[in-house]
Image 1 (cartoon, rainbow, N blue to C red):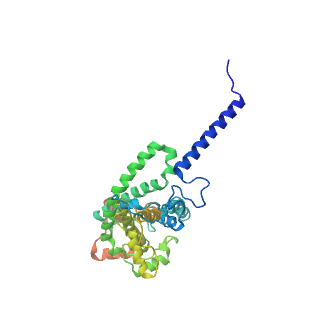
Image 2 (cartoon, rainbow, N blue to C red; image 1 turned 135 degrees about the horizontal axis):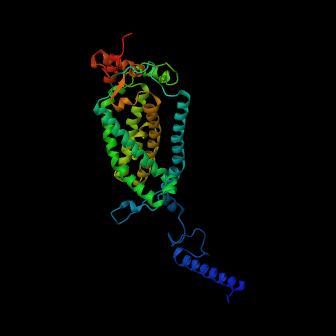
Image 3 (cartoon, rainbow, N blue to C red; image 1 turned 90 degrees about the vertical axis):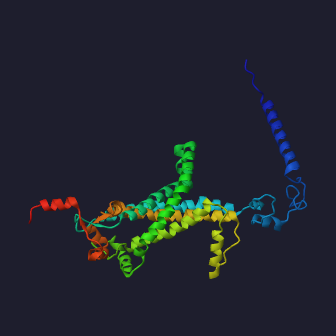
Length: 374
């Protein structure tokens, strides 16, 4: 026969349980956590500063005041690092929110542009005669930089958004393995990106210096918005020059901040930068704690990376789906002559004037010779 507990017994048991728990908490609080309840106002747990709080003392602690420690790691003297709260709030708040809006906003803008403008075709059709645009070294530098940037972007985005987007789909174990592998890939492939960035700068900096034709190109929107409008351009137009300098300067900034994260607490990049900017009338803090340098480096690294990723999405679109015949420039290194005249007419004139000569495509030449004369 099953015995049923009386409600009175259950109430008595609950009362005894809560009484014991309350007594244990009260005893622990009195013995280890600080002064009793009847202590004067402002009393500090552990009888710090003579059992009363020193407002200025605790304010300095909250502001990052450091003390002396006997261990080699002097950073341990920092009791409270309040900027960590600000770093976490900004990273998980505005940085993540605005970053995802920038990326999806760029994708939506490109989709809208493609729907309205369509693919930009070669006006005169294919000439079936090619002209060499980039040599093997230029293409190698470009593709090493492009592939390494894509890997860095994906692994970096995983660190920022993966916990919300991938972990629910893959599970914690698989997501943890992917993230760990991505971390190592990010750290080591970064050196390939930096090397290719330097090589691309040396190969193309001369061609990406501004000239008077860039103003006309920008005023006409590069001919992207108006059919049949193709402003004059040399080897690189103004849009490509913008991409070049964004990549070089942004990549340099990513490299410096990334290096500071790879070798933590060794550099004072932001303190030195703030000291330099103060020469122009600014009043920026220069006595940054080592952990503050790391937090600023991480935030700056993420901001620049997100901006560059959004811009590179537009570059990828233009070089593949957006403009007919553009991909072959970095694919085979040769482009159709009509394409070159349409987008880089001044450069074609320089080539035809003696730097090189257009080369006929073999298959097209054979087709032309077999065709009857008109």
